[in-house]
Image 1: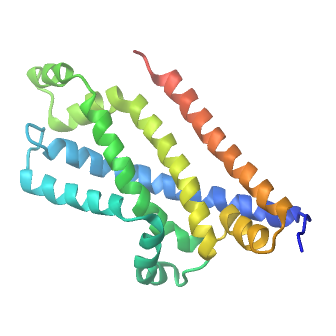
Image 2: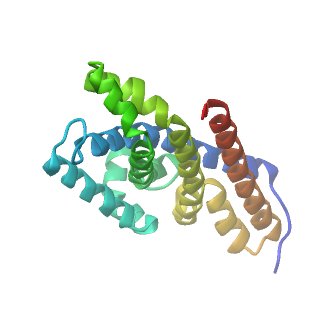
Length: 219
């Protein structure tokens, strides 16, 4: 039997859980990913802190984490999730795998953003006696900020999709609502409304990201 009833309170709770999972994990992914991106960029051949061994080790870890499908990562991190949160169900339990999945993705985007910075600008800063930390915080980050912000928006959009997958196995949010109460119970009202809201969240993240990039991009 196909249902078409919609519980607004239940829908709003799912929206909140999706927003919570997306932006909390995005916050930590942006911090950790930026730090890893700086480390990868600075330790590469010819970098500010060239260290081939360290660069290679971090690069391999990032690539391995990026290569693992998110659903498999969810399963692999169940022991860690239980140790940190005490359960593998609910929005909080989804945070560790979400952060682990999005951090290497954003780190790689940061490296790409840094590589687009004019090397002449960095060399000019070096010739004027700037320290490595000054080059990173006063040249590298400001020059690459539009691309970094764009990368944050793309990562946020990816996280919305990850939360939907996590929801399908009990993490809550719109993905859980759409699957458990929409698809499994054949409730079209819940299924389609959840889908529309997910799309709207994606559009909002992209719009905010584009607006910020447009405002800070001085090129």
